[in-house]
Length: 210
Image (cartoon, rainbow, N blue to C red; front, side):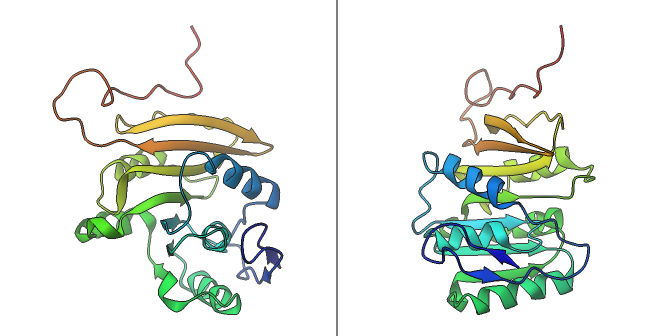
């Protein structure tokens, strides 16, 4: 069983989907993530996107803390069904939850018709540690209308994972928690014209050795 650690559903427990398709974010890391988000994004009434949703713990936590809607994207159909069951067991309104059984990258590609008012202000992404497509994922997150300008992106990776975010994703901070590394990024608006400034490339992390 997992539990909600903050907000209106604090202390409520829900079942994690069975099998090896989930790696729920620990309570400690979840709490650290939402503490860090407090000064970066207004969760009250926000729309959230939970990619590689797994147990749904991150998105459910966001809903408990005031988010108006969360789209959960999970490639494994039975695991996705578990998220629906957990949301229902917690008594969340049906119109606040959308669960999609799809690969995250494919869903982002197919979300080109997302209306501006439905774009996510917060993206939570927790791919498997062995995931090898971080560059493609970040490129997809930098551009689609499913993600709003100014949106905050939380990406969990294995510790010591090196990434170079694309120009439109500003790196805010990186912090390690044991085997997990948490990246906070902000999606910038497209620059009006080429040149240095907000559209300039984001540095690699960790910085290359001299």
